Length: 109
Length: 131
Image 1 (cartoon, rainbow over the protein chains, first blue to last red):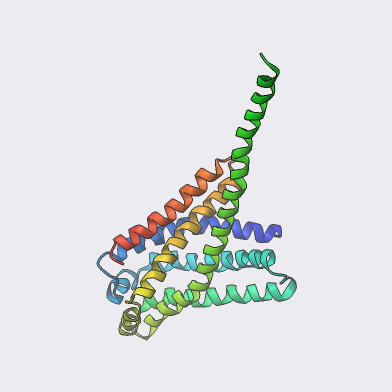
Image 2: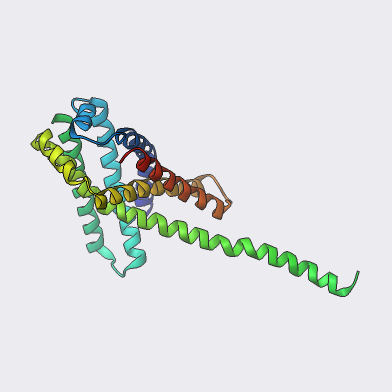
């Protein structure tokens, strides 16, 4: 792994460690007695802190996941080179677009 | 002291020392494999999770009807697996960061077992929470 990818992977891992811990705590709290759209949106609608937190979470995950997948694919398959890097960039772009759209959806809904 | 005792003691010590050395690569391999598999599962799940939440753009009713589709045993089992995988991936990732940045030696089997236990504990809490 190149130094740039290593720093990006480990740097986002630190952000994700905090974000995932908060997210897991929220999940365990939210699922008590069932999960409804009203409950989810009641917490998220118009909540600026929520939008900033999940925006950062999404961007960190979108950087972290493709770098990890790239390492696994290089270890377990013969796939290398620009096609692999391009595919992982596409995965990152997909995660950013879908993730920010999801965070915005539950913020403005 | 007899010659037999003199040769047996170092041999016993060597056998004792060899046992943890043999266990370490297995625990380390298991940790690496679990970290990778949980990461792949999460990467595959994330787009679907985002698309599901994105249905809120079409109104709360749309999100509610989507959540209604998830009220079955198969999805509940998958949700439990993903919550466990998320917790497991996080703690195994923290282990990697600790190994790379802070710790020079670790009790691998113990630490990896604790990581797996933490992942399963979060999954259990998720189930007990009424998911």
